[in-house]
Length: 194
Image 1 (cartoon, helix red, strand yellow):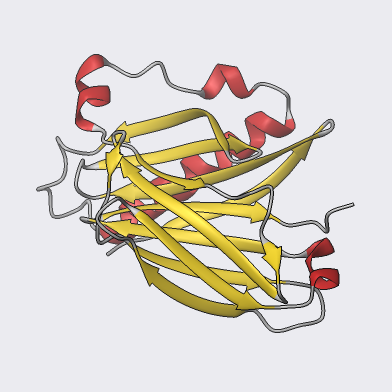
Image 2: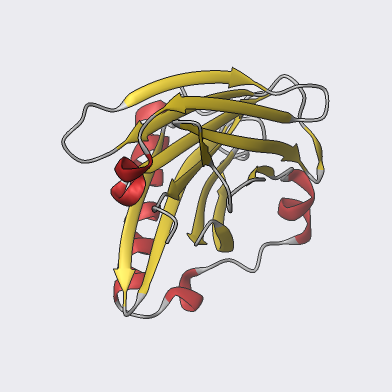
């Protein structure tokens, strides 16, 4: 079963996006911390040694991930984020192929009554062709809008959503990429150009 958690938390003037997920391909429970879309650190716990044990099922892994997510949130609130982030063992780092989602046209997304997002998905720095992207466009006082796309051979995809530019001032787009059993989720905040 695939499960994960996403939370935004503010400390001082900085908003941190905390994303935790079970990376079943690498047998890791991973929490990543992002500031303005850039990963600033992570915490990963391997469950490879106990993966075959009957008593460590999905519910137990989900509870472990939930606790790990909470610990990172608490560390941010207390201003002690660096104290909880990993300095992973080399073998853990070698096993992790990062799935990244890049927003290519962040400076110019609205034209002709359309929000257009151009994204690129990479795995360990290489293009991720055929990655499935699920988009959730949310704004105040409106139901969320969902759409999907699949990346091309270069790992790129584009979506267009018909929306008035004035509605972008408090909107956000959550993008989840799924590729070969791994997922990455990013939240992008939108604002109207001045």
